[in-house]
Image 1: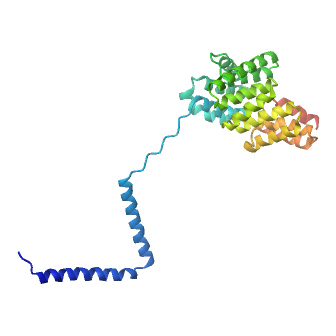
Image 2 (image 1 turned 180 degrees about the vertical axis):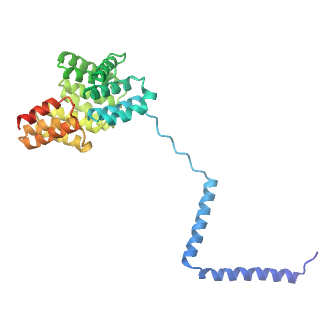
Length: 296
């Protein structure tokens, strides 16, 4: 069918007029309506862009290692925060329970929890730590804490041998991987006990730079200054450790002794009292109680 040219022209004119009227009326919309319209358009554009260019899937976080889990738990145990350590270890036991690193942390947990009067747990933990310390390859953490346990038992020659073994094994691990912050820490901690202070300080600072627990590091640095009778520097290191973790029980004990050397017995008493509140069964609890009793 042939449509007359005049009719076609009238359609075009009508369409243009309708469009013009709609455009002329647009400014009469309320501001809220215009914003809603713009928001809807923006949302539609975003949806279209998302369909056209799908977002990349974020990378999964790296899986935890036995060493990382053990170090996290050992940091809590060093602070005498046994419940926090157990909360780290128990969920990881199905995955890492058979690893030497996990065995070391679990053994130390049982030793510290057993100190509250559970002789069976204490005995089991002590045997497990000895087993970890003598395992092939040697976990430097196990060797270091074996030395600590022997020292508390007044077996000084056995303690020194364990610390020597810890420093040797940690040195091997550092040589194999200079970025191994955990190995640097246990190298430094063992060297502190062996009175080799300068290399101990280097190892500890390297451990902290590598991301190792800073409260543990400053605890050991405080020991270095304490053993060198540099009382103010010892106190400053202990202060740093407590700034990082105000519930790090052993630092209160050692800072308390440092306060005495700085002629601030008032602060010494406060720190020893705080130590006993946080670690009533800690290795220095008997000494702390005796000091507090002696000053009435």
